[in-house]
Length: 388
Ligand code: PLP
Image: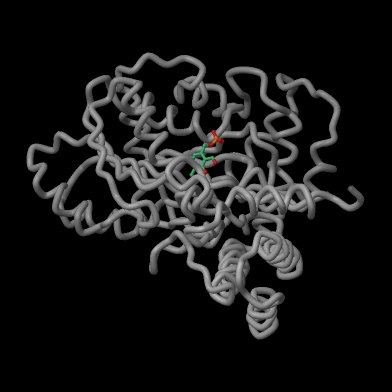
């Protein structure tokens, strides 16, 4: 099919040409005297994305899933109690990993479409007067349902309960695109991946830890080797890595950081809000609803619920086969019930309108009932009236 594939899955996201060009490098000696000139500023600038001055950032040649494991195994010990709310595929997988590692996991089920109930958390933490819970695992942006949770509220709940648990936040689909404040929100471990807001290919686990979490590495008894933070710290101190780094990834990350910091993080957040809001206006004009309940809507991904007599997989299939448009599938419990429109990373108003138009065509082809152009018109009105 002529023309490019239009990629609107919520990661991996489109890679800007500038980043692709920056990654087009030959191999380099990662033990050379000039390698630290590349790595050290990257680690310093990553902290600006995580919004931490007191924490420390790390780059692992891995993915977001490894980020979860890095946080758990470096700071905790087998049998430690951790608490997680499960309300989508990624919070499910993180809970499952914690169990498989041998942690004592308190899993609290929430409806898919809602996020972390901070009042409930406060009550549970107050009830844990012996401070048996060692860590809270919070999924900031549940990519499966398009739900964003209130991490500032999580911190408030922890403080109100005067609870000393570590706070680990999965920011794989939020960091570098949604408002994220590691220091201000008292986050002990922030976990991200390269393939979403950072606009890079998968293969980079970008994480940051507070001093409290780094202290916990001294007593954590999980066996760890490849993902040992101490090895990273020892090498990173001099600007090196404990094993062979992905040189193209580092050059790409350098470029991504430059682009994000040049745009300014507040502007990055505002852009993602506008892209998402235009998409939500379209959903509304189609007479459909988002999977996210009011107050939980994500600005990086919108999961659209299809009517009961429709199968979201048909929309996804038509979009791909007929229009070369890639949409996100509904995962596990919401398979067939939702399709997802990613609005994360390298996108602007016009690229979003392309996706919204393609979704409309695919839905109309599958017998959805709305006036052609309804969603596009609503999004156009919103984008035009709010464009700078
Ligand atoms: N957490 C969230 C919120 C995600 O969206 C994903 C992947 O989409 C992951 C974790 C897992 O990351 P990865 O696939 O990079 O291992």
